[in-house]
Length: 311
Image (cartoon, rainbow, N blue to C red; front, top):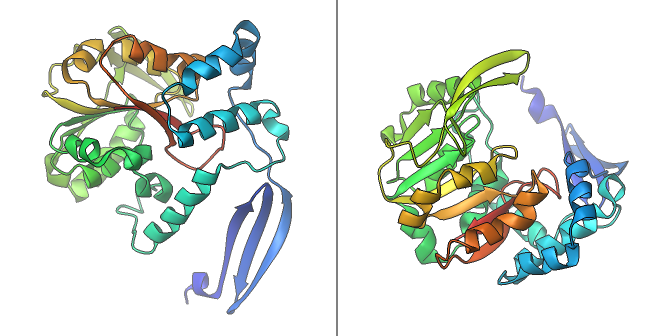
């Protein structure tokens, strides 16, 4: 007997209201659980930055050259920071609601490729880590070029990039052995045409060895710069970075590759205020003619999961 066909529960967020829909024996009921509370883990860093900087000018600089959706994300983020955990208005932007509809359509045909090993967020897959709004020629131009997946975790983004760019070699830089084991385990089931290459190393501004501690485990991890990692073939078409606050340091260690190939950059910008407000200017200072937009990689936290995309 399949219990999931008899009873099921689904959590729903509308505005700032949290509901649960319970289905039992063909009957469905929705219950209100209370207001949804925003929780953002980097509050102290941002509050300190706000005290020490002219935020009106910072926001103006960040919005310069951005499209309407990006500016909405910036304004919404700043509104959320006024309340942090106490924000009670609409926690998602209008565009977030549109992309959620796109995700629901995507879910009608999407199946998790390796459900016993990892779970891929359908929102991330449906919206291609926020890259879906790139100009068509830019998006399609990545295919066949090398993809660098910095902060590969369990391989979910590598599988995403392999789906959209099947001719590209995807180098997955992931420092933690437990995560690399997951990547290797699904590659034993499907080798993805040998296009996904796990690299158990961290990326950084300088090469070296550091100790990573996680879940009561320790890993001694080799750190390399992207510029020094010669196994990667040119040209590089995409660099994605989601590395828990080390994005700017990794960017500095990849300047030669960026200047040489001008890849699309998709960089998580929400871990530090310096990444959020200053990284765009650092990229502009390279004078490579990059254009910018902000999109969302996932739909977990309204203040998080924002990606600076340069193309």
